Image 1 (cartoon, helix red, strand yellow):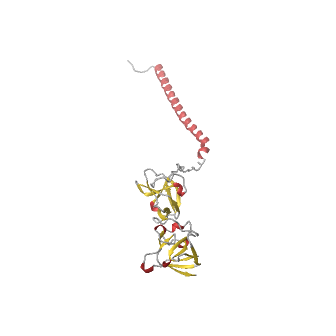
Image 2 (spheres, helix red, strand yellow):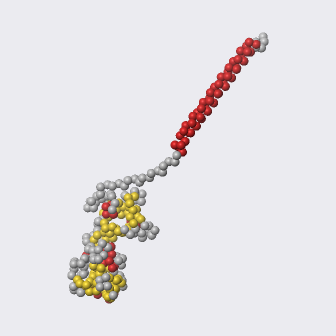
Image 3 (spheres, one colour):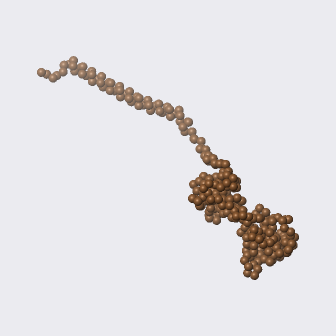
Length: 278
């Protein structure tokens, strides 16, 4: 029995193979066409959106978080969880911003909390001084002091400053007396005044009143200090010299006590002064 195909069968198989090849080519062509169609569509989309995509974006607007402004707590009400420090009787408090810790510092941060990570409220300048009614310490964060915010001119309840950049001093009341507070008369005009140490005594006291009392002492002025004054007043009993407070500038520890009234008088016992009229 022969395996040879008849001519008819041979032609039939040849036609089937050609049809299969044609279908394969058609399917491949359709796939390739679809692929290039997708590429073309993407290219068209990019072409028409290019101007919008490539236009420079506007600079981002950076806005700081708004400062919280809770209702201020009256100074007479203690702040829960904090230790409050009030001045002694007949004293008041002065906050001075300093750069003693780091000489290059000119501005000091004021923060919402007693930590370096706390949000910034404002800044104050080195050398600024503020009269304050009290201040607070946080038992868990001893490196900051808290202040009633309104006393340094910012909104809020209590704000905080690092202790290394500030100093709170207790200043003895009252400030230098004004004309008319005590009987005295002018003895000298322009004069050079030398403070001296009499008989080995300690440095003399400056006082707000022409007599000795614990409440009138501002603090001591170093013996040997020389000042120039516009006038010298003498108490009626001739025992005290009165000088314009501003003449002492920063020569006394408690000079901040008279900054608000530089023309008021401070008094020194006359035995501790040498007056040279000019």
